[in-house]
Image (cartoon, rainbow, N blue to C red; front, side, top):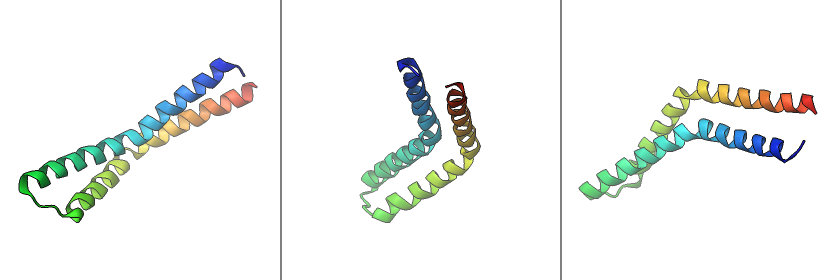
Length: 87
């Protein structure tokens, strides 16, 4: 195993993390930003108003993107096992 293999594993790992965690993090960020703008406009500073919708939206997005996440993780694991077998 040389430096190229290590760089390829790291690149693929970072891509897999972005595919798995990206949609949930983006949904949480967009929801939080929307709620913050709404709270600023209405001057209602309630913490549960910010957290509860963000949790629900994040859970819904995680459930919707679960097949994509599993396939990305499976592909990454298959790549790692092929590299291990090739050693």
